[in-house]
Length: 191
Image 1 (cartoon, rainbow, N blue to C red):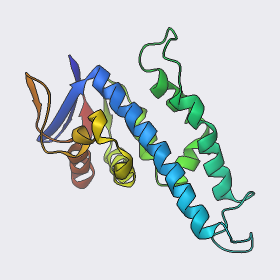
Image 2 (image 1 turned 180 degrees about the vertical axis):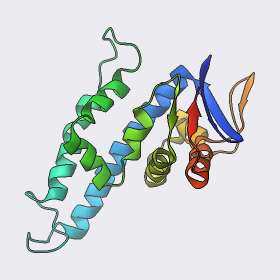
Image 3 (image 1 turned 30 degrees about the horizontal axis):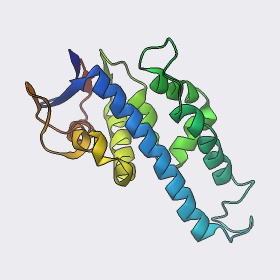
């Protein structure tokens, strides 16, 4: 038993455990992207003053957003899985953070709103809209260099065929399913 994603003639799927691990890996990769982007931006714009257009220093909206995102990184990524919650602990904590509109705006500011779209769905029934799918593809494009190939996440998202076990072959990578959704304006059905 697992979770399947269907959009027109394209589909993919995995076990519930793999889906949870996938989302946790994407959350981790997103934070690595944020840290890397912030370091690059500090190098480019760190010398600017508040009168300059690209100022990112303390007191700027950019600084406020990046600080807010990084403040929650340790709490989120080091979620204690020894609690009585099921494995959705980290994903649930992330979704709870996104109830704070400021945090959600910070993700959107960096073009990472697809992380909320990806994580804020049921594992058993539901839909990703074409808009959700576009946001998710934009997220995956941005964080692609940070997705670890050793976790299996990279292969699940970007390769043409991936065997999850001896009995099941995924016909399409996850990225292709979401891309097909926004290009054809068709929902991705979660079943």
